[in-house]
Length: 423
Image 1 (spheres, rainbow, N blue to C red):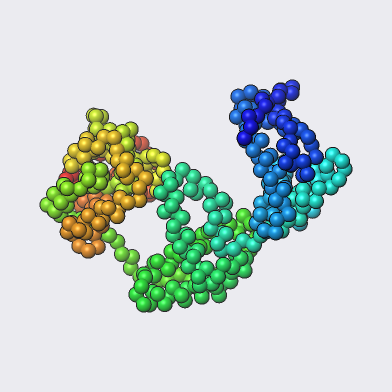
Image 2: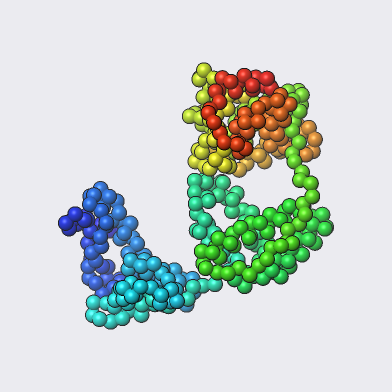
């Protein structure tokens, strides 16, 4: 893009003033544009001008593409055109209910300097462009637009893992029911989908919980998307979910197994993975929390050495997950060897697979149901047997505290408790 001319000051406001490229002469009657940058700061104006110009270019391109037969393309172009004229795109029915002054402004903005109505602009400003059908497949991407705040701050791997089960559920539903518009999905469609899952559950291919997750993900996506698009969902979810029976939990490793089998057995592992395992033993932190540690959050030189679990280029599981955990025993030794953190696994989904595979291949699983995550359950089990106070257990695990929190817990005090169960 050619270098922009500097913003121009008029009174107390800076403006972008630039000649319109010849490419857009057929859809932009002005030879020169003058757009307020809505600031009295030259620094801010210099930063905003390139973005405003780019938006204008995109709007002109949208107008050039405005006669496309692609419904989504035409609708996106209409929204861009409306935005470039200072309006929000609204369907015709809503435009008709606008106050007279705004309606007149929209009509006047559709007329060029020669007094001619630009039909493409008029359609965009008066809501004459039909919105495309919002199908099941489109609802997935739309969900991440409508609920962008839910994934704000997530790392690339966290976002991938957030999308994966929702993409799977979407594909499964389309395979069974089809890529229907959301407002045409019926309760019968949901039960057809349930019947497909029931055959797989009955055949022993999957657990009921797996089928339920698909239902939960789909409905949780469709509701906010339909609400944003002002669509009415015609579904009743009563009786759709499967009874999951007694929930299976991962068993904890016993202290004896950790000391006599597990720790001697991981000596040959790569240094970072081994370090994460050893820190997990006496902190109970989640694998993703440990892999994100770095030189700022591993503090081995403090009077009470500790790790600080906090957002590091990623989000935490909940607001209760940020916490300080004193380092004791094998965990302190591992932290001293890995003071700069674990760059190999900082945002790498391979950690759990790597550890679980090593446990399997080296006979380090106490039972077939034991996994890497069982170390977290072991830490919690040891706290329970040592009669840790409920609040202390919750804070160390990063769980919700079931009553209002008062005061802070001293790290020296916490270390005293941890020394009782340290390995």
